Amino acid sequence: MSAKLQAKLGDDRYEFDGLQTAHNHDFMVDERFKSAYRRGVKAAGNDYQWYWRVHIGLWAAATAIKLCGDFVECGVNRGFLSSAIMQQHDWDTTQRTFYLLDTFQGIDVKYLNEHEIEGGVLERNQIEINRGFYTQNLKEVEDNFAEWKNIKFVVGSIPQTLQKITSKQIAFLHIDLNCTEPEVAALDYLWPKLVCGAVVLLDDYAYFGYQPQKDGLDAWAVSRNIAIASLPTGQGLIIKT
Image 1 (tube, rainbow, N blue to C red):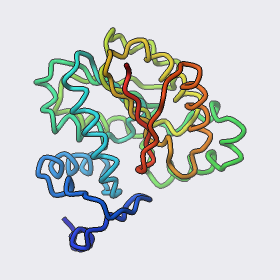
Image 2: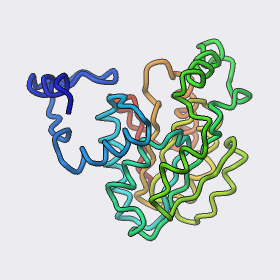
Image 3: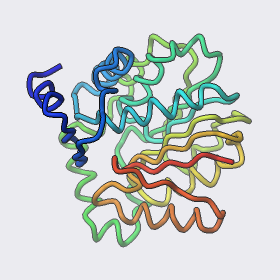
Image 4: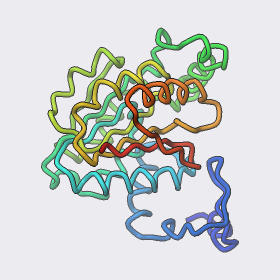
């Protein structure tokens, strides 16, 4: 743990990733959390200080692991959250499959709507590719996950690749595509496969700068009479009932 992080913990304040609070955040000194988080950092090659977002993701996975069904991540990139989850749950002992979907080419820009283009998503996508945040090295990602057997990579653009998810039951769904149309398509396609109690985590639902995604997901939720919880981490959360 860095001296800077230790100092912030000592001050009883949390100030990371757009979230500032004086409320309890002692999950950050929990050994299981720290171990899983380190595995995520190893996968990403960087610590983006996503502590509370990862905490929520690990909670979601721990809730879903008690249910029958596979896990799905739409927008795996380098595998920060999925690696942390698999490390924490000793994945191959769970006897379930983790589907890992991504273009491994950044956002498929043909799916951007006019509001996203006006908001600079096209330019931001290219910046993230250029600086290496969006990986284009599939082999490197595969190597990161090589310690686990029960995984399935699905390479390409959503929604075309969704039919490759052959599971009939899904307990956990993480969507982090940074683009409205494929996010809504993934949620709509996979919703019937989600078991009762399944957890859906929407990475950028309430995150600053991603209003078009929230608008699209909200419209979908209204059409289904479903409520999405907006979290101060910038995430959105759905429990299927």
